[in-house]
Amino acid sequence: MTLMDKNLGLVEVQKLEGHTDRVWNVAWNPAADGVLASCSADKTVRIWEQSSLTRSWTCKAVLEGTHTRTVKSLAWSPCGKLLATASFDGTTCVWENFATDSESVSVLQVHESEVKSVSWNASGSLLATCGRDKSVWIWEILPEYEFDCSAVLTGHSEDVKMVLWHPTMNVLFSCSYDNTIKIWCSEDEDGDYNCVQTLGESNNGHSSTVWSISFNAAGDKMVTCSDDLTVKIWKTDISRMQSGEGYVPWTHVCTLSGFHDRTIYSVHWSRDGVIASGAGDDTIQLFVDSNSDSVDRPSYKLLLKKEKAHEKDVNSVQWAPDKESRLLASASDDKMVKIWKLASEP
Amino acid sequence: MTLGLINANPVVQAKKERLVRREDQYRDDGVDPLEIYEYVRDIRDPEHPYTLEQLSVLSEESVTVDDKLDRILIMFTPTIQHCSMANIIGLCLRAKLKECLPLHYKVDIRVSPGSHADEVSVNKQLNDKERVAAALENPNLRQLVDECIYSDEI
Image (tube, rainbow over all chains, first blue to last red; front, side):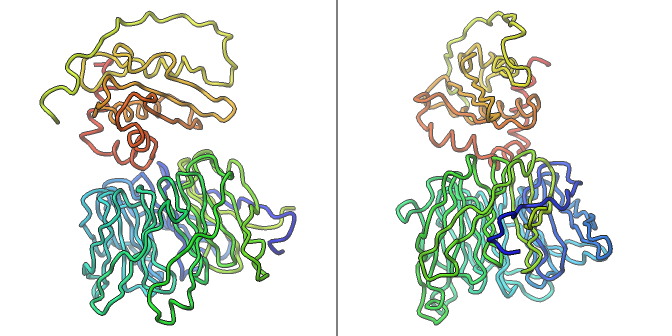
């Protein structure tokens, strides 16, 4: 089966029930096959594991009692042993020991209001958080789960919805209710982070709140989605940046519009090049570059549209990290997490 | 909270008579805009002891329903251009409708065009569901909202 197969469909594999309020986000463990975490307005995080025997998922742990308000976002460390959770209660918690007794090993309390997102860098040495107080914080992880504040980045003029580290370099991306995407990196020996670029309306950027960012496997392209009902694709010359030339700006490649008619909350780029989007119109849509094999300009098109993927808004879509399974997890206001497979329909 | 009322002299309408509607007026499987209006007309204004209907913040024309797309639009008219209660009124509408409506309806809430100095920013905040959810989790705001939406039960 290839992406050119005419009978491709998003097949529902399983519905994971358990959360008692809307589910905001899901995250696959990057190091353990078939392990997924979800977080909810019910103030808990659930860890789901796939049984090697039955191949179906069950809830292995419920992390509760620590966050006192909605848990908005979560991220696994690259080694898969730690899970960071961001909450409306203003704290970011780091958890470990899921096999036995999940334990919150660290609580970071610095944001003045709701924390919206948390992200680990590629090596697991840095953590970034952001929130409604318009700031982005960078933390260095020290032995014994100590977190040292490395930078407080101000610049966004409104609520910061998501932060995401670049997959290979220590460059941090943030997107906001102020309609922009900001890029932060440390250009000098001081190690101080600065905003090196802002992608706004004047650079073909979004005209309303930007909710989510995702990178392709190579890290030379980025996809973003917004309340302006569009998905935008951006690129940079990654080899120039990696060769130490200094910061190389990102530029707009194309805008996908007319596909969703409600706010698009989440986008995620799979390792084999499929972009998934989830929105307030209850659909999940998949896009691919139809020119990826040729030297022609990229041309993104709709691969498929899954209507009524959930009963209500789709808040998060995440491809499983491996290259073969083509599994997609989604989270919704309908309190469900669903697992899908991109496959030929019978 | 400021000590003085934002609008010390609101214009108050008499409470409207409840009209008896014809049963067959709307599709069975659709939602009747007047039915939705019934849920929200008696929400109490956050500042004054009157309902949103009495203050002409809401009227029967406030609610429109798109049956094909299952979407509801509510337009409300703050009593003055610089009303800082606009966001609270919007939260009250959302909180009340969350309880009453069939789950799959999408609700958009806006101030009537030209009725508020910060129309664009108020509308943006009222339609950002994350901001709405976080506001309704704030105990002080939640208490104020509850007082407005449950006032007829006190």
